[in-house]
Image (cartoon, rainbow, N blue to C red; front, side, top):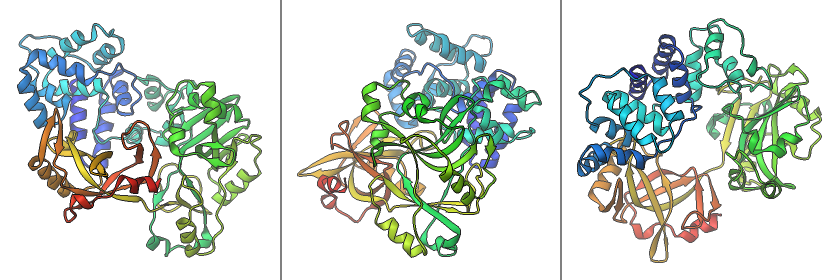
Length: 517
């Protein structure tokens, strides 16, 4: 457990990508099985553990330290796991060192009733850094600046394999990944990963009109950017899989689409809810995401469909090295034999001004903008700069009033960085959303000072604020939501500007938001 705790600490306080890769690579090389496999699963969010609730941890801490002392400490530190790790009384008795495997076993196998006592006993055996690592594991809150792909890239370093090869077999493996480590060391390829493999997807980079001006429009295709989720559909040897862009098998939530995949190959596209020709809002798709089973009523009311962008393999032939225009021709000639699967149409344009006009007159609200793809580009895993671009529509913007603030976590511990904002509904301010980013580090300090000077009430870690500060909130979309008091839910809201100059009375009305819908 010491090595895992040290790993998390070093990753959290290391900013550079290459430095993080070095830290991870050294850990995987030096740590024995199965601990390194459990660590890999924790970092890639593939470790299925009994999640420990914050309320249980607060109760355990309250049994060991003064409640007021704990409350003050938590308010200052801002992170529950870190507060408990620091304030938990050190044990005076010697006990065997806890391994990461011990911690995983406890969280996987301990019953609900016995769990509190088992957690307390384990915390008693640990040092403060080990406690922090264990509690991050127990709560599922790693927050060390490492993506699943970065962890897999580190895994590939100093081996004969590359990250794309690892990602192709990743879906067929389970923690603690001992067959994977054996293969990386020169062993045989794990058999469980050979059927219907995932191929790492190709991603786009943002572009501006100024960047476009330097490119030849004749060398590019363009198509709509649909507001669904990117998926890869693989039908091979009788097996059918539907993968998210990260390689997660999400087919259980979309059996209707799996049934429609009567082809032999792998294709790339957008997962949507489509009723006849009409594409439904993302909120409709969200109702099916993450489910392990789907009711018959849901299958009928929210029918899944696949809108294709690209083709990777077809009838045993790997097409990824071909230019996009050749792959597109193959895609158009392929027979998918289902009205649930169609092709994303190409847009007709000659100049960038033509495309600018198309982007400014989107035919449907479910279109996020345009995708621009070089005709000669092969299909390259990852996010290469140049072949594919995304030019999203301009975000929606409202001026809102800050209502509540909560302290952040990790590097933001000690700062108020999570904000709830509202709009006027007559004489009342109604909460309409939350934002956690969009501001600079310097602006974060200014917002933190404002919170501390203008708090009117405290509710645990949450501060209610005097309704004085207006912020410009940008967001990508808007849906009806019965879960929110305002009746609306924003997609990807962020604070794009702090309006120190604007009186709160001049913030937008809730009706302004409703008209945007």
